[in-house]
Image (cartoon, rainbow, N blue to C red; front, side, top):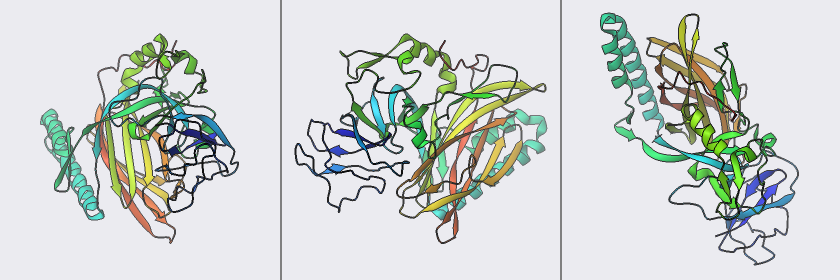
Length: 409
């Protein structure tokens, strides 16, 4: 199966045609920003007359400029196995062009929560947390034993209680990818393009730096395509990480620089757990990452970043108004954080632009902890509702003495 990959302005928008190996020409400009309507007459391909193309989601952050430009030829989706290093793709949700660097294998904890079950689960988490704090203070002489009890009682790493149903993690593939810098300006309002951050190596324990155009993409968000260009992706690390080899498929192979960079930064790049929860058609996906430990004022400070994606799976337009976090540290503290929006924004999720993705950071004076909470959304009629943020663990690892190197040397 192959198909035309066409760009609307600089932002890639994808469409798939049935079983025809040619680059198709669209006879008229097609505005995909309103989504695909199967009941509406579709444009014909001038070379084969096909009308049936399928797309689960179209998204564009560019309201004007409907210039269609060929990018490459679609390849079949991989139902089994994984995409290889050098695979070109379009992001099925955010529409940018990218290329796969290497895969990660994570445990996905997927929940589907009704409002009643969500409230019960949240209440249960609060009770467990406060009980744990009480026991820690009550039995301070047996602190280490009580901490172990709280960890086991509050959240099991291999299964998560959800009402009367136990949710177990299943293995799922994600990919470390480069984003084409030409597309970054057009997705910046929907997805951060500098979301992968590292702790700096100097004395400032709060200093962070980012690698622009680096992202994590789930297997089902990959729309693979091929191109005859030797440099189909514009990114400052593209030619440092990848080598064009026309004898291979895909025709790009990893350089030693990429392998060395992956090995050195593996502890800070690796994702191990992914958490999803859906409330009233709003799906929240959370991926935590351990960043390392720094010393500040004679104490150890442990840092994590977490990536959150919000997706509106319904037809109703909603806007995120508030966040409400609970942050539990195994040092015995429970912090509550409330605020307007996220990262300075109050994104609107609609059928045309259903997703928003961002990253943030948290630090604890303990090597582990937990986070959970809610987002408050507003409907167009002014009513509000809460969406659960799935609980997730903050775990440190054994690599604290090896600081991240970030960019390849």
